[in-house]
Amino acid sequence: MITTLLVLAPILVGLLFVSALFSAGETSMTAASRGRMHQLERDGDKAAKRVNRLLTDQEKMIGAILLGNNLINIGASALTTSVLAAMFPGAMGIAISTGVMTVLILVFGEVLPKTLAITKPDDVARGMSRMVLWAVYIFGPVVQAVQWFVRKTLKLFGVNMSMETDVLAAHQEIRGAIEYHHDEGSVEKRDRNMFRGVLDLSELDVSQIMVHRKQIFMIDADLGIERIIDEALKIGHTRIPLYRDNQENIVGVLHARDLFAAITKARGDVLSLDIDAITREPWFIPDTTNLKSQLNAFLKQKQHFALVVDEYGALQGMVTLEDILEEIVGDIEDEHDTAQTGIRKQADGSLIVDGDVPIRDLNRFMDWDLPDDDAVTIAGLVIYEARTIPQPGQTFIFFDRKFQILRRQRNQITALKITPIVIED
Image 1 (tube, one colour):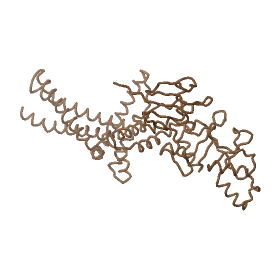
Image 2 (cartoon, helix red, strand yellow):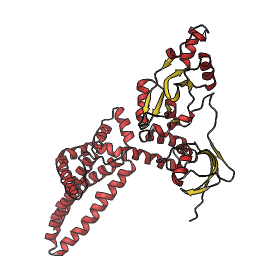
Image 3 (cartoon, one colour):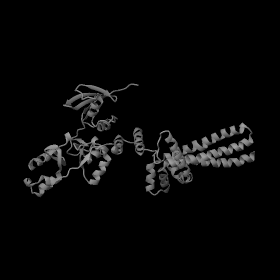
Image 4 (cartoon, rainbow, N blue to C red):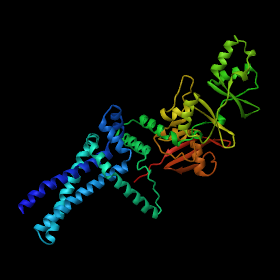
């Protein structure tokens, strides 16, 4: 009996050690920082390169680790049971084997290695990368066969998963990490908003940030050149749309630099200028273009200004490169801008808000989460929720806030008061 135990002990220790390695590899690989691994790979770290290679197919990697770990644990349990069953006939040997192996596997094969791995996941992942890579090579074909069988089985129950299904949503993972570190106090509100803005670019359309057509400063191209110059100086913007007959008919975009260069070239003889010769072709984009695509288009076309039209070709507004950048960094004000947010805090904790203030700007300013899926401005949100155009003095309550209409001009809400409602537990 003693000889048998002496032979069993080192084999069991070896199997538990391998099981511990598999458990540590699984925990460290899933907890390792992808950002740090990519940085280390760029710095020439070969272990980090192996980790990144494994993380490209995380489902296959975890499947291989679990398969190897289960084989080791089942093998160790079977070996121990066979030995103890011979030493203790009947159910006693099986009961002793079950109790002993449960404790040994739980403590030394699971809890202990995983606890050590979670304390320094990056270092452990790099150290375990070679062994895990070999496990994937050995067990990979079996794992793929199992994945195929699982997907076919799930398909019978109406769950369709392709072999390319991504088990992680990268944007949501990053967004969750940012929110967590913000709540912990290690990421400031302004930085949190900038990260959010970058992640939101692909989810927002230009229609959600554009300057509405009613707010666009335009010049009639049929005015005399002196009047056009005078109007351009009054407007003060670098790029100004020109129209003919009606403001829907945009015929060009006047760039202030082109205008001043032409005046200089004409030696001040403004009457000799041909306004059509110095205007640029307008760039029209659909209102469904997302901000990420439009930002790339601005960079590719080397332009800063585009006019937004709907599916019928009707002018809806305009968007600039600065508008998109402001979604990331917040309002960009220069010496010609008027500091006006349209949001005024009151002593009682309420807000006086202009109706045309974008919901996203209000959310950023107050750290709120008012929905912006069905409306762009705060006035639009009230109209959408009320299902009517409210009259001054009317009050509505939704999203744990009271919205009181202060001013209305024709069919447009121009000012309202928002008061948060304190909900007692």
